[in-house]
Length: 212
Image 1 (cartoon, rainbow, N blue to C red):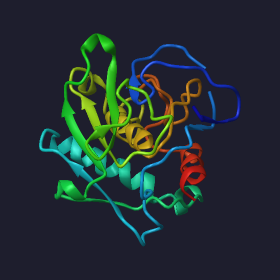
Image 2 (image 1 turned 30 degrees about the vertical axis):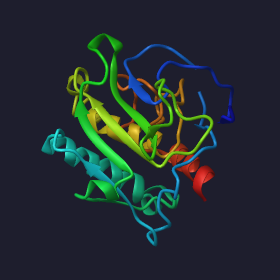
Image 3 (image 1 turned 60 degrees about the vertical axis):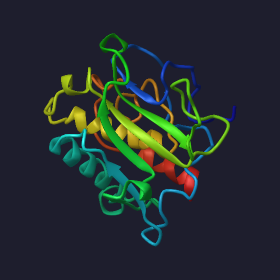
């Protein structure tokens, strides 16, 4: 297992590719496993990647997904950090490497708001609910977990927690692990207590460490 940890030490955690209900754990600026999406996440606009939204997602979810992607992509002026991320929406699923669904993947009591599944062609790379730690992947399924997702607020002191789940899972799909003690980072694993709802400089630096 080659996990890259930046700042402080790491601990294991349940469902590293999912967003959970709150519990106390421990943190970093960013954490990666060193493995990436085959073909990268775009090339500064010269090579676009695509995302697809399944009809199971409502128009509100579709809007949140689009906003989350925009906040990942347009960061040079807002945060002074440029990444290679260049992702567009497609209605042709075969062109997509990020597929979004709204369905029941976990039970209510599991406390999971969203989860990312990793695939290489038709083989699931990680089948235990964890981020891949031994290989790259070719495409991902991001599942907004229906038993819990809509319980999150859309305006909690200015935070859209549902959109935050979309942004968090996008981070996983591009290769970022959880940051487990800093609620002011997007990759904090607890969607009901996180203090941001979009990517921060920490996640952008993590993407650059993987793809630049």
